[in-house]
Amino acid sequence: MTMSENPHPDPARTGDEEAALRALRRFLDVGEDLFLLLDPEGCIRAAGNATRRFLGREPEECLGLEFASLSHPDDRERSQRVFGGWVAQAESVHGQLESRVVCRAGQVRPVSWSATILRDEQGIVTGVGCMAREITQQKRFEMALLESEARHRALLKGVLDPLVTIDLQGIVQSASDSVEPVFGYRPAEIVGRNISFLMPEPHVRLHNSYLENYRATGVTKILGQTREFEVLHKDGTLIVCELSVSRIDIPGQAEPLFTGSFRDIRLRKQAEAALRERESRLSAIFDQEFQLVGLLDLDGNLLDVNRASLQMIGVEPADVIGKFFPDTPWWGVNSRDRQRLIDALPRVRAGEFVRFEAEHCDTDGVVHTIDFSLKPVRDEDGQVVMMIPEGRDITSLRRAVESERQLLRALAEVGESAAVLAHEIKNPITAVNFALKAVADQLGEDSREVIEDLAERMQHLERRLRGTLSFVKPLHLTPTPLETRSLLEDVLSALDGELASLGVQAEIDPLCASVDFSGDLGRLEDVVINLVRNASQAVGDGGRIQLSAREGARGQVELLVDDDGPGIPESQRETLFKPFVTTRAEGTGLGLAICRRIVREHGGRMRVTDSPLGGARFVVRLPLKCREQDA
Image (cartoon, rainbow, N blue to C red; front, side, top):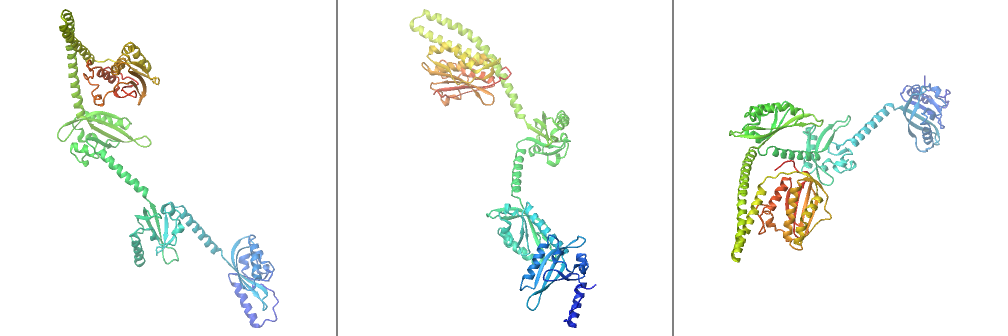
């Protein structure tokens, strides 16, 4: 069927014109594109055979239809408006329109209309010739391109590491949003610039030469590899990054693109440096003076060991690493110790900590006593995954302990002998003292003074012997529940008359804490009484003494004795608590020594310092709970 039109020919047309029109109709009928001839009002006057494929209609069915009615309902208003614009323009003879046409079966096809405005000699529009070309494939390509660009934008927006694409001249074509937090530049500030602006010297010159060489030879070593690279931040600082470069070949493009992925590794570098430093410190600790430190697997095989323990037995790491630990030379001295170690392995695998003393022999054949322990190493789930053997050389300590034991036994024997000797001397001294007093009553005044002086000296010697007996005599503590304020009140009650006769004012601090603790009541009363008496002798008539108590650090209690006397010089404080050291002519030098001994037996300490009252302060620091043992 030929192109449908008005069937009546125009008699004014010549034969050549008719022939040209018939040729045009045949071309339009066989062409793939849809041709329509519209009148100035937009109604179809003629239609080509392509209406069957485009519209699902015969050409004759289209005659008289409005051009806009062929469009999708959503496009009709725009199609009508565009057609009106074609007809209204006085000069334009061509028009373009993209719309969607709807087939009779409901199929929608995107088409591109090309319009030619027909005018007569007076310029009046006589019709519009429209040619439509289906652009379904083109739209698919455009949609695919849009989707690709959207994915590309999403990729550039979402990647955590900076991603930069350059061309063969080094010009940045695109950049991810992540360049800003790392490099300080917004993507728009980078695109269009040569990538070399991110490089410090001498990398700028080298990079340009690399690109030039690649353009000339096609050879490069950077593609497909990752290397460390310094990037110049916007603020001028250098950032250490890992750079990976890949080539992108785009179909239809003569030159490739290159994508560089940068990974900021500053934090990793800092962590690696910290790890190296930590490993160095651990290695220094691991390889300190002799101390066996190693690592075992769950089967008891040696995984690692420190250098000092290797030197002790004169072996290299290869001689022992990987071997069953009980079979190593450290355990060749005593078969009993080796068996104890073998028996300990399953216990440690079960999570138990094992410790015992063992004997190891060094390269000189000297046997060392080792405080050995084997402890489990657990993972995050609490499962035992390895074992740590550790041995500390306690040979010298054992020798020192034994020497101390011998010394203590010797001192005990001396103390017992001194006690016996003092007891034997005390009775004769007492008898001599009574005899001297009897003789003095029968002598003259001058001779009596000599005898009385001699008797006084004998009494002083007797007091010193009595103090010596008290000092060397073993202490047996009987701890009972005590309370600080009650203890201090009992002391002042016992000394009330004595202090009044000396004219000394003694009181308990109103802010004194009431602390419950345990100790030997009689022994601690002796300590405080001795300190108060010493203070009363120091302050003299009109002096002031204040007693107090307070909670100390780490579960302790402190008893305080302050006075407003002359104080104790720094030079005398170190020797103040030693036996037979005294600053008084009539003192034995054993009072403070005995006080310190009682305090130590309670597990406490005693010291002297300056008092807020201006004199001396004695501090007795005691644990809240007296240790359960006798001295």
